Amino acid sequence: MTNRATFAAGCFWGVESIFRKVHGVISTRVGYTGGKTDDPTYEEVCSGRTGHAEAVEVGFDPSTVTYERLLEIFWEMHDPTTLNRQGPDRGTQYRSAIIYHDPEQKRLAEESLQTLENSGRHGDRRIVTEIVPADTFWPAEEYHQCYFEKTGRDSCRVH
Image (cartoon, rainbow, N blue to C red; front, side, top):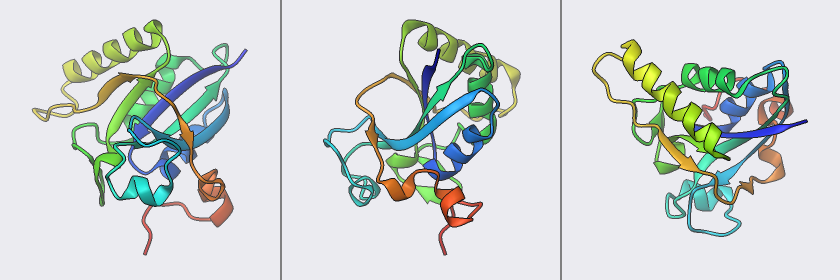
């Protein structure tokens, strides 16, 4: 059985690359979600006018890796205190979000956010991660899928 989880944590190439290495992750797909434009292109999303976030849909085997573990990895891979930004990437498409697919994922996401806030790991900086229900997930263009593997890159920075 495969479950689905969706996360936005900045440039989707790097997010996908991290999740692909997790034992129990069966599939990944990068794309766009949370906006108002149907079937957007990368260029449209990068313009900031669609409202979509770059996101990664993760297919996982819950008997091998739990949703809770995927949440831990999500919190570790990015800075959830920077609004609409990760590193040098700026814009609403780079926002931090947990996109839940059912009430249990919502509950677990909210609990994990509360645990992180209570940990003091980020000092007095406020966590700005959105926890939102799943909307239509528009797969990104094929050349974005498994981008690091296809290009030999290991960073989202484009020079």
